[in-house]
Length: 287
Image 1 (tube, one colour):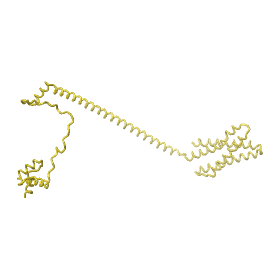
Image 2 (spheres, helix red, strand yellow; image 1 turned 30 degrees about the horizontal axis):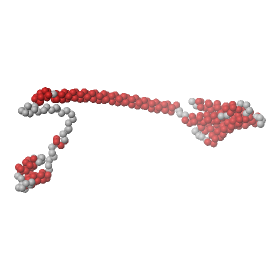
Image 3 (cartoon, rainbow, N blue to C red; image 1 turned 135 degrees about the vertical axis):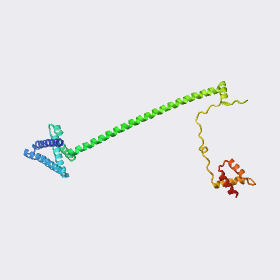
Image 4 (cartoon, rainbow, N blue to C red; image 1 turned 180 degrees about the horizontal axis):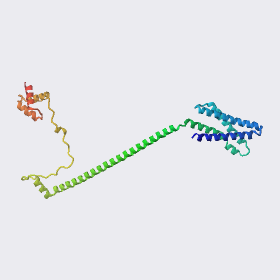
């Protein structure tokens, strides 16, 4: 795996160094002796190799030096500048030389990519652990999706069953209402008929001389519920309230009423009390 990033960087560096050396020798060879041009080219390539080697050593130790990195990029920019200058001054094949002028910068970029790969590289054990965690997460997600789909299908089935049951109930209610309506119509027709009405009247009520009761249809429809108070007994009166009511009834006339008269008016007024409590209240107010 390491060779996938280091081999392209080494190849690009070698090509860039060869091109730089060749361009320096050809370009400066016309102005200075060729040994001098060769030394200049080797100096550029040597400085680049030296800074690159030192950067790799620091990277192997887990360290980094910005000054060394800046010097290395300076040599790369210098080599690219030499190639660009040669391409611009060349009389023949200027475009070809300009097309390869970017190789030194590309070589430095490849070494940067290789350094980043080394800083983020993991051991096979760690990669296996990561793959296991990812697989477990995928399995859990798949199970959760399957559970949600099953729950959705179950809920859909339940809603379908409830809807169908409600539709059946509605159909039964509609059919029952139709049957009742038909029966009611039949009763109304029988009631409206002259002969049928007299026959039904004679069998539903006693016929008295001069009176012919009318046969009424049975009540069909909503009825009003009885009030809750009508089903509950009236609250019992306290002794004080009972004494006040008994005294008011007893002294409502002059002379005062007797116990029997007072009791009759007490019950006629809608009050309720046992005979023993009512007599005790009479004794208390009459004392």
